[in-house]
Amino acid sequence: MPEGIVTELLIGVALVAILGAVFFLAPTRRDRTRRPKDADPVIAPPKPEETVTAEGPTTAPTAEADSRRAPPTAPEFPQDAVAERPSLRERLSRSRKFLSDRLADAFHGAPDDDTWDDVEAALIQADIGVDLATKIVDDLRDKARQRRVASADDVRALLADELVELFDTDLDRGLAFAPTGTTVWLVVGVNGTGKTTTIGKLAKDLKERNRTVALAAADTFRAAADEQLGVWGERAGAEVVRHQHGADPGAVAYDAYKFARARNLDVLLVDTAGRLHTKTPLMDELAKVRRVIEKEGQVHEALLVIDATAGQNGLTQAREFAEASGVTGIVLTKLDGTAKGGIALAIEQTLRIPIKLIGVGEAIDDIEPFDPKTFVDALLS
Image (cartoon, rainbow, N blue to C red):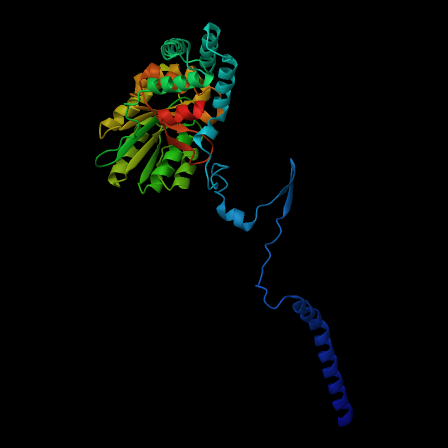
């Protein structure tokens, strides 16, 4: 082939290549010219993918949301990420509304016999108990007469003072710690009161206060109880000591104490089976768990977890557990879910055991120390 023809062919191929490059690069150049010169580089987050479930289409969480979520097996706490927690007054809105509505109905002017009967009925319905409600109203009637109280607001203020006085403000409501060595807290109660959840919340709170924690899975009766506690241990960063299902709870508690003491851990939380207070052999087993621990150390707290929605039945539970395990304090859970917060006063008046902690929500930090005045203010405000 002549040299001139070859040269022309090479020039033609080069031109085609140049034109093709210009054609493909032109859109990119045009796109860049539309963008302001001073604009910061922006990477738009990918749109969440939509999936379809039995309940209908749902949106998959973004990568940012995934980074904040607990592992799939961990309990869900809808308020964990909320910066500002609701006040106790807001938490007790159901009980507050229940009482305020009934007290408002009772007062139509200066208090008379019908007024005091209505107040007594309101207190009984709030689960304070018949005998205690009668005592409160008798005291209120005398004070109102002596002070010539004639308005609903004044009576409400008298009632608030009366309720605070009935709580023993001299009781020590702090949680006991060992002066040296490992502190042991035994957590007891019937099924469904929230024992394991309470243990998880306590473990997380302790870890945030720079205390080392171990959990003893001494509930060997309920299937998967140790697995549930294991999830809490992982979430709170606490060691978990467990045996196989059906093992002797006392043996688990004993080994857990030896484990915690050998590693100089600060606190051991012992989870126990949610046993019915009417089952004597199970209550005896609970007493045995305590005795086994005390062969080597000391139980510094025996915390009875009571579901506030259980009402007066919680008193029966408390009596039985107090005898079996030497209850030193009460954790009253689910107060945000009941309209009958008066059970708190009934428990203390009947048992003379201090309420030390209250559970007021589903979030992991929804547990707080119990203060009678704050509680009454929230209840009657």
